[in-house]
Length: 188
Image (tube, rainbow, N blue to C red; front, side, top):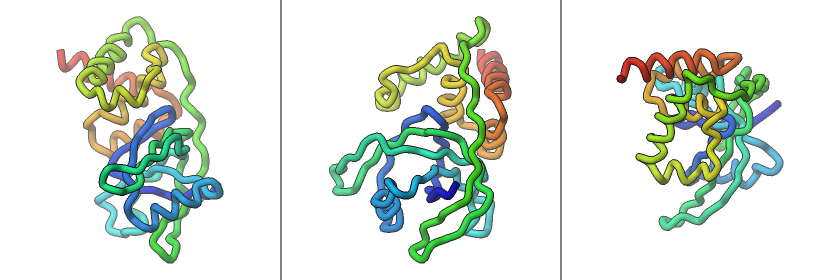
């Protein structure tokens, strides 16, 4: 599958919602063509000296769920993460827009949090309470679903990007849930 690649300094995972400000002409074109050409959000890799390839390989295909004209006159969009993908090849178009060949990755299976993991959802609820503008993006949070909770934590958790990419690339949510459980125990 071929997707336009939109590099950011943040992760978005399936089920995640993110507002974006679009101001560069190449990304305005990306939005204008989004009905014909889907796109993916990619995490920037600042250690990579090659400007074409300064993205980590795991990205998330997204779908636009809302448009808005922002007070500063820029285009605002809100995207929903659809599926994780692995970038296998990439190139740049004349205006600098990057495009890549990607392979879809299997979704993490949904499942209920185990009894000893409910504190992870409670701690995430505390984050939502502390950041109401973030919480407003999720009118129906799924506090019981282990994958939903793990993916929202990965979007906000301040850990090194390399570690985040390793967790995002995992075949299931278990490495993330283990890390989160360890961090929660260590913080108390």
